[in-house]
Length: 103
Image (tube, rainbow, N blue to C red; front, side):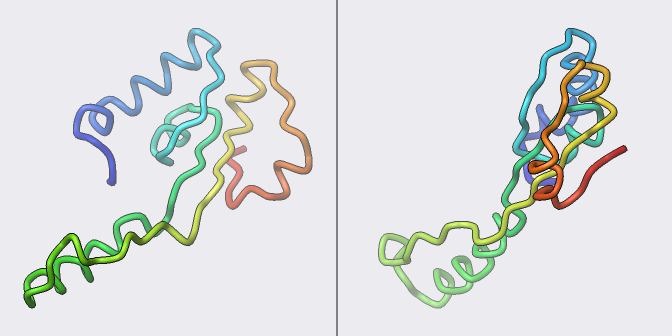
């Protein structure tokens, strides 16, 4: 998973606490939504450029000369069970745009 060990280790707990205290939250990793968070909007290919950077650096390129590469694909994940528990209605236009909806 592409997040810090602290957050990754406690993603289930953090998602459950947000739901328990009725805190609607948007996360940058899908694991939180899978564990009860409301919405996640995250870069799917965030780490892909790392391989090419490492390859170039090992072949002698200077890190300062490498171009900045931004993610090109994002995913929207919505947990409808959490939305219902929080009393939140997710607009149909947002549901249509979601890459995945947990029911």
